[in-house]
Length: 121
Image (tube, rainbow, N blue to C red; front, side):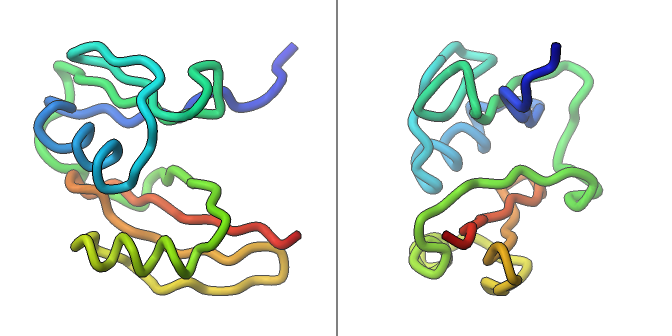
């Protein structure tokens, strides 16, 4: 029986060069599993979490950042938007409010799109 999402992964030519420092140091996700070529980011390695891995078939930046998106659950999307923007993160859009969720989207250093999601209470 499938119970739900455990992890979402992003593969890179070398996670140590760009993705790991970005997601760990700029975004602020904690490391749950740390190896040279594969990491799990999040409070619980069993999920939900973000995985980053080095893959021999991946070269350079993502040519289509909108193909898939990782969503990060936040308490205050406006505050995270301001914090990350001041750290130089490139945003695709500003926070936009919908009936159930407020969303904004940014690019990671390899061109992958990431969304900040603040769900209505």
